[in-house]
Length: 74
Image (cartoon, rainbow, N blue to C red):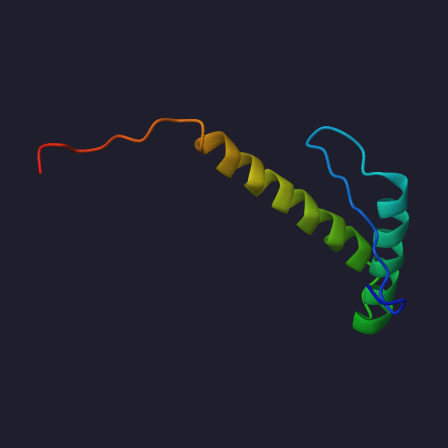
């Protein structure tokens, strides 16, 4: 990767904290979004969107543990 990109690993846990580097990065990103959009709540919205994404992934992963029924009478 070239030096023009910043790579920040983001580790999210369902019931755990976000790693410190990711928290700092996301707070900075949220601040920039707030400046661009003119809404001070953008940082909170960013964290909420990440939370929803984790919950959606968990539901897909959970549903993947069930067996699927195959109709053999067709």
